[in-house]
Amino acid sequence: MKKFKKVLALSLATAMTVASLAGCGSKEPASNPTAAPSGNTDVTTAAPEAKEGSVLNIYVWNEEFKSRVTDHYPGYVKVDETTGKIGDVTVKWNVTANQDNAYQNNLDETLLKQDSAAADDKIDMFLVEADYAIKYVGTDYTMPVKDLGITDAELANQYQYTKDVVTDANGVLKGVSWQGCPGVLIYSRDIAKDVFGTDDPAEVQKKVADWDTFEKTAEEVKAKGYYMVSGYDDAYRVFSNNATTPWVVDGKVVIDDGLMTWVEQTKKFTDAGYNNKSSLWGDVWTKGFYPDGKVFCYFGPAWFVDFSMQVDDKTSIAANGGWAATEGPQGFFWGGTWICAATGTDNPTLVADIMRQLTTNETIMTDIVKADNDFVNNKPAMEAMAKDASYKNKVLGGQNPLAMFCAGAEKIELSNLTSYDQGCNEEFQAAMKDYFDGNATLEDALAKFKKAIVVKYPELKAE
Image (cartoon, rainbow, N blue to C red; front, side):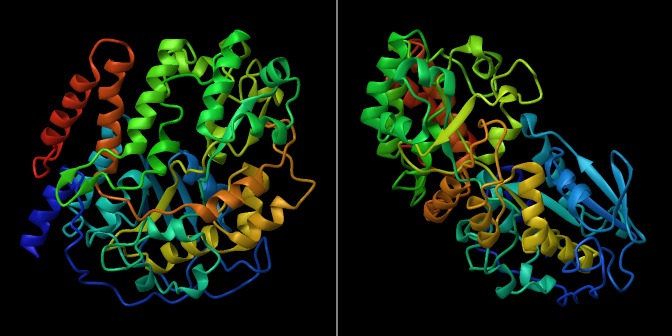
């Protein structure tokens, strides 16, 4: 076990998976909470039947999952911004922002002390994102879902790709998610009317049906004084999700042809003025969420529509229902959040029930769609909402885009996922910006990327 912990420390520090290590020391499956009346008659009681740990520690990087629990988990009582109660259990939220890798650094440091920590200080649950999920599910610090008593039958209505993300090299499921993140093209209705004479999604789709058409439309949009996209990164996820080879093959870094197509397109868009040379999440990039930004489209999933487009600002396009959605050139996904149970938790029954209620309970998940506009990880719930004429997305001018999201979720395929994806994606985009700006040749930018990867992952070869 000491040898394992030494290897794990190296794994967590370098964002690597210990996929070759087999699971050990699992608890016996937890029993299900006893059913009893609550807000919905098909929902089990919030508190576990038997007393377990007195404190439930949950590690997150923002308020999203926290709000899902506080708003939708039966019996949750808020105490303050970082504390709650579920029955006799005190819930403590440890929130550390993602910036500069702070969340993972904090999580890694605490997980490595899990064995020696006092019961009330142990991590019980923590969240991971797709880009680095393998780093954690490939270690013994995440519990197999089956060891919590959750069966395959209970998860049958979830989208397959959401399970693939958190399945280790031995085929063991190590987490669950309440959401799916298939993406669409989100465009400005006003710009569409000005340039094309219509903002109808079916007609706009004809203008962005494939990448060749997308580029021709970019020229048309530019001629009317607008930007096709905001910046360098907007289409990146679409290309990277459709790569045909993984980032690493036999210990060597491989740059997929599709990513080089993104480089070629982005350089063309930059030189031609089809974008405004912005970077993801930057001030210039965000300006496109307002009329003065003059940006025609962004690519994003459901969470992007309602959480990233400045809907709370009355002057934004989103606040005035000025966006619409269509399929775009290719399907893709972006992001997502997975719930993992930490090995050593003294609250396995409560952890399992939170997982069940938020990821398998169709009533609760439908409520999440209606209240939060999230795309939930439940096929029957989403298919019903896609056909519900009363469901309207305010940001999208009353459009119901869920049928597009449902179709996209079924097509997501993750056979090329590796533990190096986050680092490779970040370093590749960073290196290419020098090329886009004219500050480096393509050869120099590629060399910069390869050098950065070898420094980040010394065990790899970048040829």
